[in-house]
Length: 248
Image (cartoon, rainbow, N blue to C red; front, side, top):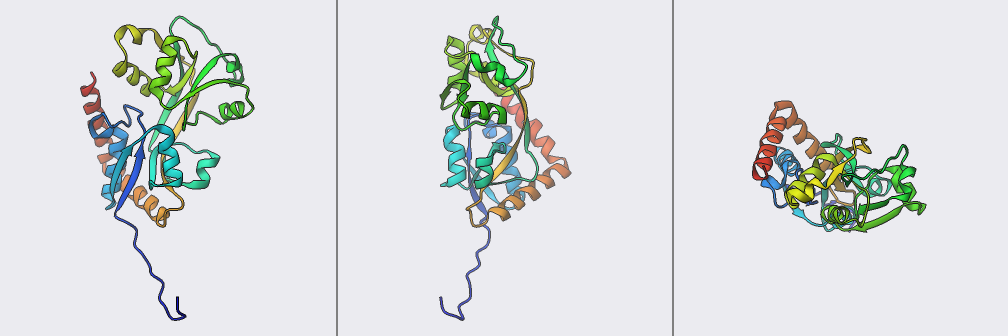
């Protein structure tokens, strides 16, 4: 570049490609609007003048693709040290999930601290982050973990006795059981009343994106505008009704 050349300044794009994970009822390619959380995210961007497209992929690919490309970002993720290095987060959570352990009905797996579950067989889904304590125990090889690529496979493994406990969002787990298993199979699975973790979930944009900060700020503005106008609550209610009417 010559000494007098003017740097090229590009404007933030008016379109974005996000990954979505199969986590019904909040997100799924098989649900109206892609699930109610998918609709909230795309509508918040739309309000800010950005056309957000969502490609649903397996969980691990969803987060890795958002962190390193080829995607611009994703949604429905919590903070971890590794993710924080590669992602920018929305200023506010877009959903707060109650995570519990699912297990077979009639069996008991008591625990007071998470180290107490070390003798049980746990199912984990690749790409998901359950808690700092579980991550530390896993890194120290103190847990018996069977990993697979998706939550549905873990629920199936739980049903046939290959694992004892599977951590998942309470509402999401119950919805997945309802829509993928027979009434007899559903009756064989239940969840603990003890909350494993209350998980705030965010929109995330890849830090290496040339307009990452602008895109996060646009999303924040759109989300706030929807919330302040009352449209956010209406969108969630309308979308949830559509989802649950599809799977009564």
